[in-house]
Length: 376
Image (tube, rainbow, N blue to C red; front, side, top):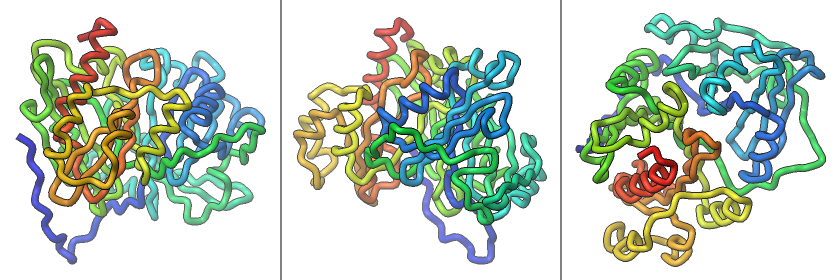
């Protein structure tokens, strides 16, 4: 049964040992960064920000940084088959390697997390150029995913040292995507609580919401999920694991094709989901569709909403309500040939939950896609 943990007023005497200022960037390891960057420009509306490669003194890889409002994506590709990025892409396909978190002090973030049991990925490193100094450090997570801690208070360059401003002829036009609402991890059988404990003990997060296999299940499959949030609520990480079902769940399919644990989807917020999704569809982004019957009793389930029902139904946007308001959400199909990474577009109108009322319709839609691929 879903459990929304009570909101206890934080003891003012307790200090958050890992204060986070939000998601700094998300880095994807991909087979062809030039093409991936163009796709995210043309399809999602990201704008070119910075480039790193042989021309900037980086000899082993190339990286393209793109930005839309507060969302920064980086796409990196190896230039040689022996590079770690090439091995990562060979095993997993294109996928998320790094979730970078903005901090006031990267050295303190590394010290506090490693002394609590995190495995170090990168000790405190100071990068400098004519635009100042950027400080970073990092720790290992599930699978091959990492967190980098980014301190950029004293840096004024386009992105970070080693990059140059990137201003190509083609410029993507924004689609209204604002910031990263949350990132969802898929972990292996019986591994969810291990990573819940990690975020609680190592990073000072708290479990704000839990779903068991009765909440997230269909006739055929099930999964379990717990939502972790940092102290100020700027960073949220739902963590999914498979649960027993008649057939293969979406988490199992992901684990099979990604060949390990990793980021399943990234939720990006908008203030006008109808406008954003309309533009994304026009640019070729494919979304999961639920049956029209979902909308027949929608208003009786969620109450009055500001939006007209017709465009929501036409676009396939889902609606759910909690005690604080309602939300609108929709999920893309996987954005690569492997059925792994996808995106969620979400608009919150007070609600702080994650759409429990939509789980059944959503996961049945995912199962229809799994069946079409022969993986259910």
